[in-house]
Length: 450
Image (cartoon, rainbow, N blue to C red; front, top):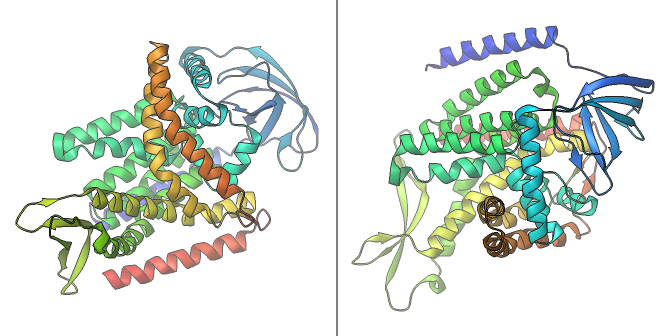
C-alpha cells in the first residue's frame, strides 16, 4: 500500500472517530452528589485484601470482599462520588446475575485461581494467576511494590504478556513455515484473550499486539507505524471509550516505543554484547574461536553496518550459536523492549499517577527472563490442576522458581530509597516535554540511518 493510501485511510478513520466520539459521548457520573443508579458490571472487579473495586463509567466503587461480583451482574448502587472519581462506603445490591459465557469464564478462572493458591505461597500464586488468568487478587503491599518498580503490568493481562504468547509461535517460523506460525500465533493470542475473559481492554490489547507483531514480521518500520496508526484508529472507532482509558493509552504507547526506539536500542545494546563476547574468558580452552559480527551492506550510505545477530564461528567448522551467544541476544532484546516500552509509557504514568520509577527499566530487564517460564509453567499447572492435582503439584514446584525470583527482585528494588519520585497528578507540561524529547531523538537517529 502506498503512503498516499495509508494517509488517506488514516485521515478518514480519524474523521470517523471524531464524529463517533461527538455522537457517543462517554458516560459520566456527577461528583459530590448523593446518587442512586443501576449499572451492569462490564469489567472484572479488582480484588484486594479487604474489598473489591468495581468500575462503572468514570467512577470506581469500593465495596466489601463479599459477595463477589462478576461481569454481567446488574447492581443497584447508592453513595457519593468524590472529586477523584471514587465512591467509598457504597451500598451495592445485586439485582440480577450475569449469565452466558462471561459468567462461565469467571467461575472457570476462579476455580483455577483457587487451585493455584492451594499449590504455592500467596505472592507467587497471585503472580501466576495474574499473568496466566488475568485474575487481579494481589495484596496491597505487593501491589505497591509492583507499582514502585514498574512491573505491575506482569500481573494483569497486558500487551507484554500477549506479545510473549505471539512470540512463542512466531519463533517457530523457521521450522514450520511463516504462514503456519502466523496462524498459530493469531489463534494463541485470541485463545489467551478468551480464557482471560475477552473483556474490552483484553481484546484491544490482543488486536494491537497482533497488528504490531505481524507488521514487524512482514514489513518495514515505516509500514509498521502506519499500520499501528490505522489499527489504533479502528480500535477507538469500535470502542470510543478506549481513547480515554489509561490501559489503551499505555498499550499503544508501549507498542509504539518498541517498534521505534526499541529497534535503535537493540542495535546499541548489541554493540556492548558483541564486545563482551570477544573477551577471552568466554572462549573454550580446547577450541580456537573467532568472534565475528555478521554485517549487512547499507546501499544508501555505502557503508557496512552491524546486523542484529552475533555469532561465534569455530575455525574449520560450521557456525553455531553458543549458550553465551543466545544469552547475549536474549538480554539485548529484553533490555531494548523493557527500556523503550517504559520510556514511552513514563509520560502517561506521570500524568495520571503523578509518580515515576527511575529503576523500572533495570527491574523490568531483570525480571523479563522469568516471565516466559512463569507463564508457560503456570499455564501447564493451571490446566493440570483441573485434571490431576498430584502432577499439577510437581509442575507448581517448577513454576514457583521463576515466580519466586520475580517476587524477590521486586521486593529488593522496591526497598531502595530512590525507587520512586512524585511529581503530582495532571502534570501535562512534563509529560509533553518528555514526549517531545523522545520524538526529537527518534527523528535525529532516523535521519542518520536513512
